[in-house]
Length: 403
Ligand code: NDP
Image (cartoon, rainbow, N blue to C red; front, side, top):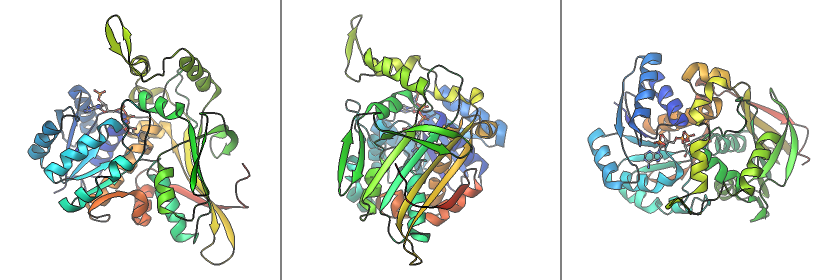
């Protein structure tokens, strides 16, 4: 019996819960709780229709630790899978500690009043998780998540050391809307409007948001502008690959997205400081998120592919000198929608969340304390990516990237 409790009922959760139900041999008993119970019920209904599996649903405010502890005590899961928002990471970890249950998430903690996503808040739980004899696995989505596993796979099978690393995230999908984000709008906009940061020669180099770009020809998408950004796996990769001289993260954005975002920024709609409106305090970005299309509604109209991967250069394992490898996954939005009723960005995050959960429930990945994906054996996870809808390709390039 593997009972799992999933928190959050957005697009990522929907994909993950569907995938868990499709693998009922691993996930024998699935429970889903979120702030809005009707969203859990809608996911449960779709799962029932597509797989015949029952999912139990609950209403919970995950920031209320005693309520979370009660729910965990009631459900008795082996694992809590946090697919709510980064703000809830710490309260859910607190509840897991109190109830003595393993924890997994896909995005690192962010305080609400500061757009700063860093691991140190969650790493600080390591000793308490260790003492409690339980495991927390951080960042089991695509990026972070699969990008770290791809990198460690290359470092295990192709390269003895990694000198340079570039993560390239391209969403070549078209949702047909003038402006929408493919995952939670508030989190997405906080991420892309934060200053860019990359790792170079042992320190962080900061540049203004969305200023440095390069054109890259993505397989099954085409040429796209990719912008230098900060992304959380840079922190864990630079920690666990000490020889890294440079690590960068690039994400593609279309001209329309940039145009809308620039206007919204210029008029103050992306701000996270509260303002007074008709006697009430509101946060402009939260108001904006409320009027933008919900990511889970984009699936039906989204066409095209995502293409996310890493390019790594380092000393070849076979002693043949310096080599460069590119490893990536291409995911079709239409195929993701057909299988789970969700678009590709939710799919590429929800599937690795299911795989990370399977790794923990089966004991393939185990430990006591707080762990990042880089600390685990990449091979079984890579095997499951191929089997569960996110197959990957690896090829050798002629030389290091020229951008
Ligand atoms: P959504 O906004 O679609 O879903 C978030 C869900 O969390 C909603 O159902 C929301 O409830 C629920 N929630 C919010 N606050 C609380 C709370 N206090 N208590 C209980 N539930 C709450 O987001 P996504 O599905 O797009 O993203 C989910 C997570 O995945 C995010 O943390 C995101 O950063 C991460 N992510 C990770 C990626 C990766 O590759 N690693 C890529 C994309 C996303 P309600 O329905 O009431 O609003």
